Image (tube, rainbow, N blue to C red):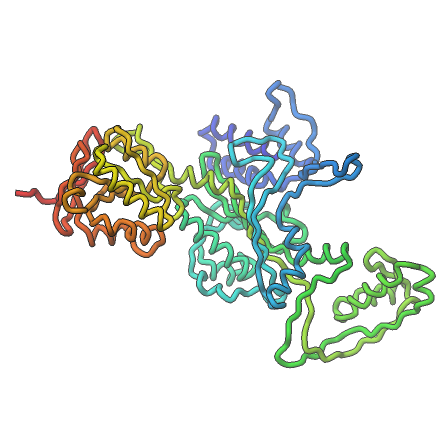
Length: 544
């Protein structure tokens, strides 16, 4: 129902471009809160906007439904199971093993990638709304009393576009602010959460996303999980609008506490103190006879629950007050009466503190990120709209380099095979195109699939062993010895050098319409001219 509301508001704004700024802002404010409305509020808004089914009839009242896929287990199908809606729970169940692997040290993180399943009622928009999807999740376990991050200083100055809940309900404007300042002013709850937000931003920029189409939107209080301390979604703008692609949530201690209660297994970490500390505790004395008569086999569970609360007077004090005032209190679903236990407040010197860790979770939707990257990388050449290009960053391009012979002779083909083998030996995925198509056409084929560099073996190669390397986006070319091709491509792909540095080191070349290259000079400056056949570089000064 919330998606219906969002769609009908989009349609309204499109059909009424002359609405006042105030009216537009009001409609957009309602649209931004669509996820947060109750079913009753959604029904009222759908009636207000006259939202109807394709048949022309009004929709029936909205109702909540289970987003998890239900399935039957066993030969007779009598056991009920559910496909996992997220990968995180497997990490929570194995928390004790993960803590042991990390030598009981806190904080620490674990990551997992796998499939999740959601009961999506309206699959659409390619990879954006599907029932089965790939997701990657990081679970960072941290002391709830200290959510600082040891590496936060390395990203504190990173500028982020944040869309806080107050701005969503008010001005509708985003703000440009550093991660450190966002934590300092309380906009982002803690350093660890801001650290992962900044790292996500850096990752997106590194793989080739357009930074101007990235923002972090804070969950409204009405849409945030009841146990969460703070949540921010990285949203990426595409042709479908702003799409949430990465969730960043401070899930507090909820998951580990629930698993601990159900499995009767403590999921605790330990903080060793440099100097002993005095804490206030409750010393308990049980009436075992009364407990046994009332709770029978659950007697031990009741006493354990009370002893766990008694480790800290702050957690036991509310129970003590209830027993004093009402004569009874509820602990883990068991009703305790005053006669079952007596207590005294005392001080205890401790050398370590046990706690249930909080969890900071970045969750990545792989399909949505991949789709957004494809959109952000696609463009058409200005001189020819039929020539489409995928401007993949060399780090993530499926093919790093294309190797092309200028002619199909045996000698040039042998050099092509030699260069391709050398590139692949260095784990650089390579595309070889020995077809008889024109060289310009073969360049265009490589551009269409995002190959960042193209090595051309021409007639000069047979004479002096040099080749040309063409960069996809600028279409500029340099000439260098074939023995240096692999090291140059490898260093650019791994961020050790840049194309700009390569242009300074090697001579640029001028390419004519037949794809033939001529030397220009050591580091001669070039300008780009366009013709109906495309763009070509030429020397800035005429050669006499």
